[in-house]
Image 1: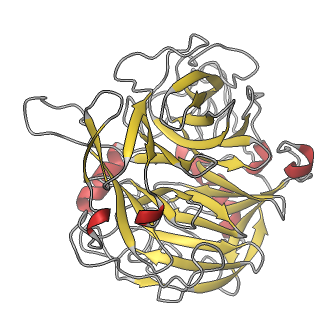
Image 2 (image 1 turned 135 degrees about the horizontal axis):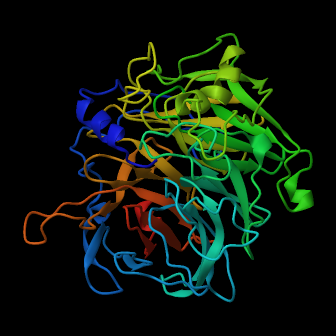
Length: 500
């Protein structure tokens, strides 16, 4: 999810547009959906009724315009780390706000569990304790009790000592699962940043459980794999966790983790389960990152991952010899040896009525013929997939016809009315998009948070939306603008009127 230097280069060299394609979606929010172009209008002018048109809206906090929204909507920003923010436990709030879940909080408040996608070794933010995994890692999660109009009542560190906490998933038993989008550790060489991993005390690349009402135990679910995790969702009927992988330069996989005991019974996710990877029945090593024909629909099977938690030999205090790229591919390569499918950069996902919807950020272009270490794996502008957990069928929901229509979908959530809200991670303007049953896209919000540059010169806007999640009653959409410093928003208004 993070916009790395190589990702920025990727976006500047992409040209043309993927061919539009789509399919009738599965049961759930997209039943009857026919995928295809949302329209031929320029980006940000997708057509439709005037009441969906975006306009500058002042922030309820201080009157500054940070978002454009439809008529009748309001918002309040909070936890703006452009200035230091100190939480109730003395934590200096970190930036890089990313994935987030919303739960019933105390009184009328909403409890948010929010990721902070901070990379590179360094002292853990906040107090150190049982909720600390690695004292020399700078990522983690914060707990925020906030009103539906964005007024913070209480906040503290819920998990620290992790790295690159990207997205995750909201669990129905009352927990947030956070995902590390990295395989850094003292046992591997530096990642794309070139920063030494020697200071790290533990391997990374795991998922962690964070309870809504307290602190994490700081223990990774290692059997759910050590790979660049992005997001998770949970099917309570099966008791299974579904996991996406965002492996920038290599094929990414779609996984499922089956714990020994259904967490709906035990109240937590155990570390005694098995990890599997999706494969297309009768089509080993399917290139699903490539352009899909209209109506693409696949019967799937699952292959076992024999060694989900690799560690590599190293001497503490000395640089490791195992390349980071080797570690990044270790788990996925096991699945591909058994025929697992390859996707392009799987990111956000959400479970709704027996269907898991997930995004492929660079999917939909020409199929890859090899690894592209600079430009990323995938030549398109994005796909949305749906996996029916009951029929075990995978279907393409939407495929971008080009950058001007839909550019690099990332985090997603589902509204109470069954509309997907998709966060774009574009190199240009970044939007929140709505995607409905009729295959239509429309703008929900536009980022106009000024970043860097000369305040007196032309405005420069940047960074992705992330962590979109509705309050339990559906009235408020909480979302982050990631940026190096980070900011969170509460947005409310007539959702039904704009089809969300």
